[in-house]
Image (tube, rainbow over the protein chains, first blue to last red):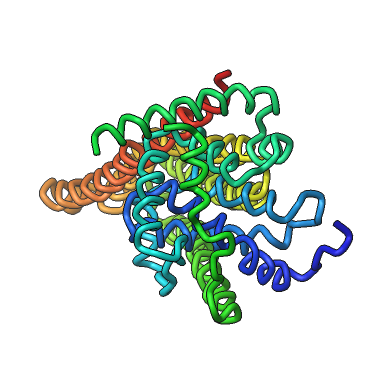
Length: 170
Length: 203
């Protein structure tokens, strides 16, 4: 961690290059419409940009960005966001997460299942699906590793059940 | 369906999502957006400071008229005016402290950030509850001032009633807006944050 770029501008470039995906996935998991998704994505970018000068390299940059992005998403208020969006709109659309329409459809189906989980469970499952270690997840959430293990077991069962029900409906 | 299927669906997403093409333009936009928000805070602070100065100016300007009235009314006037100045200053300091606290804790753990947000909402709710006492006091002060500056014996009941009704309408509107903000923004926000934190605290 000694080669951490010191300037926020350099860190921001690194975040955009390597971690745009995690910000976009977070925006997808916490919103239901494209407009809200763009709003939340912008809000996450603003929060990250604002938080980067405080980054001193004690944690991995990705963990730091996860922390900021998920805190922002859990604090995000739709109605206020709409008002704020009118106030300081700038044109930035959320990048696509998938390459083809078929993949997009499948991924959208999965996000619809994830939306059915409570907010904190959504955060945990996203971190798990992105293959974060329990130690990193504990650092992001403030929960203990053992607690995360117990919760994840339950969330995985719940998500699998929701997915099965949805498959039957189809 | 197995969890592995969910994981494979998740894996359909691109490993590296393309970043916005022009990073310099994005940085400029983000900086502008933050500047705009900071300006809103500064406007609020400036409005508070103007309010403080204006209240002192109005008090000094009315000092002669007020001194013509009995000493007890002068004392009440002075007390209310200084009390309101103190309340305004208090609110100003709390708002600045709240913004600093939020800015400092942005990158803490999710639990810490949510606790901070809840504390800030609780602070705002406390201020609105404080407002339940301040708004009637402010209205009383304005009514008293209207009475002292234009006594009924001089202007008649009709003119005084109009002034009093206008004062009550203005303060009533302020109270209604404050109540709506408390009821439809702050209280649901507090409930939502409490529920999310409870979710984090449950085993």
